[in-house]
Length: 268
Ligand SMILES: Nc1ncnc2c1ncn2[C@@H]1O[C@H](COP(=O)(O)OP(=O)(O)OP(=O)(O)O)[C@@H](O)[C@H]1O
Ligand SMILES: [Mg+2]
Image 1 (cartoon, helix red, strand yellow):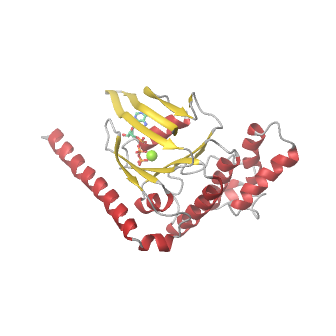
Image 2 (image 1 turned 180 degrees about the vertical axis):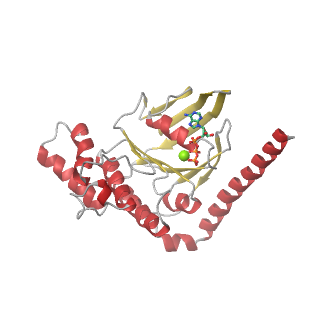
Image 3 (image 1 turned 90 degrees about the vertical axis):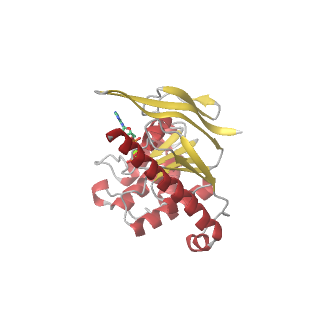
């Protein structure tokens, strides 16, 4: 049974040139504990979908169900991680994470809350940076704070919008590792947006490929049947990996071609 369900999700933005239908009839079911990556061309509407699911962007049509309940606005049952984490600049790593914990675990004792913060900050490798402020942290470290903060709330669902998109390749690999190790412990239901086909295969159980906008929806879905836990080197050597990669790339390339055709027709 689906734990998460997007039903006929649609988004229309009002623009000076009239209504822009960005997402239309986006249907997706995710099982509890499943890790799904959403892949698609720039501007197709991935962040629009994620922000509607997060409750940060009004849904024009359709609905989103999480654990049997329709979502209404944002809430701590969804842990969100963006490309750059929104950390409060005057607060330390510890306090930034504690902020959410204090809200969600208001029944817990101070000692219990401290233990939660300590557990997640250690899990992401920040035990030596607890008292630093965001401007004293590297981009990768800030993203570690973002991950710790999201996981620490034990949300029903993790929503990640290109969390490693701004990092160099090496840091990105490190952070993918941090994310997947944490996820392996907790198996949170996750929806992650990425541009990176390799990242999608390495991390996810399924890759959802969006069609090009306007009126984007779910195009194709790839079932990634690689065993977990995965090692990047081993996974990349498998025949399946290459097949998934080819399938994703050919879907994306085909869309580029269709997009070019559409543009040509429009200008003709
Ligand atoms: N508030 C808004 N008003 C009008 N149009 C918008 C608004 N937000 C986004 N759009 C348009 O909706 C489309 C999809 O945007 P969105 O940010 O969801 O794409 P994306 O797939 O996340 O792109 P990227 O991969 O570059 O992050 C774009 O054409 C964008 O210009
Ligand atoms: Mg985006």
